[in-house]
Image (cartoon, helix red, strand yellow):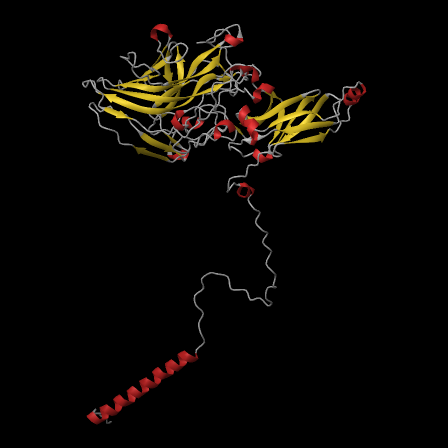
Length: 583
């Protein structure tokens, strides 16, 4: 047996290496070729359903037409320019009377009392309205020439040309009155006062429709503006419910305040002057309430504090034809330091509805009362838990002497006590009234160290026809006031170290009184009225109810800090319930 031993010489080793390298290259190339020719592998499934292959494309349908957008009627009716005013031209026209088919009309014609077939309507010149001190045209109505009939006719008078003459829904507030002949020459005479005529005001058609008597002679009729209409009222409203709400994140209210700088004083009892805003101040209002904003704007207020009493309207108290206020019940609400609350009477004392320990006292009568214009001198004192005393309605501050300034902090209005045990009650209704306070403003603050701050006010006085008696001059009442300043004195300093005097605009040049928006006075003032046709002198042509808005752009009261109360009203408040409870 033999064996062969192979010895790897260098030349042989090179040949073997070259063969192995070539074989490896062929295998790798074959692998690449195999990878190219092999079928593609599907990606791992994502779980989505496979795409459905449609045999036919979706039909081509036209897009649905888009209906045109309906115009916003509110935007279309919004006034962008001042409406044109066309006062009716003077002239005369004869209007045929259309008889109404009714048994009463037929009986009247048979008896010879039928109305005339034609009525003569004469519109007088605007200068006549100016001299008679009425807001609208003056018309003379009588039967036409040659007519002998006499009776009642239903007549419609148009005011389309002057519906927007003075603003404030002037046309909707127009009513019809009958004027004596002397009203054309001496309108302020008590015997020349206008007499209301029942009429229907159609604000959409701009017409006044009334039933009048037509016979021998003629009669004068005029259009005058009242304080209310179906579109709203200038009358007094209840205490704004928004002031009773809590300001919290859940309420959605936005609050903002801006403190004003005041001079520093010894003792640190400087008056706080803060402009406050609350976005919910206008909540609780409707188109039929008095919604006059403050001079600062909607939602802003500026008051130091007050106590307010609510009265009832005499109409709600069963007195038809009276636009006055009547006693309701003993009540009060208090606004102080940005907080408002109803006061609850317990015996001879009062407390906050959400009592915080403050002591509330009311003083009145010839001994304990103040000289402030209220019938029995009522004023209030609130002592907070830190010992600070707040006085409302003092008017003549402690140490007052003849010649010293009065604070004018009490606003009064005639109030009737038409039931037994009510203030100012009298068996004769004409004498059952007196001037009672409807707001007592904060006018004196004293801390535990004897430092005091005093607040002074400027009142705006208006007049109205008490008990709708237009045969006498109007009765005065306070409908608004503004802060005229405050002074602060230290208990250790005899002089007054700090004084603040805001500059409010006067309602008329030099503060003169006028009948706002009346043609007789409109040309004499460059200040636009806030209450068109409701600001009057004490004459027989005064309105027949207390109006509720300021005649100027001024604050309706003093400053307030952090208040959620709505912009102040400027009128005696009214409550809608009747009570015979006395004081």
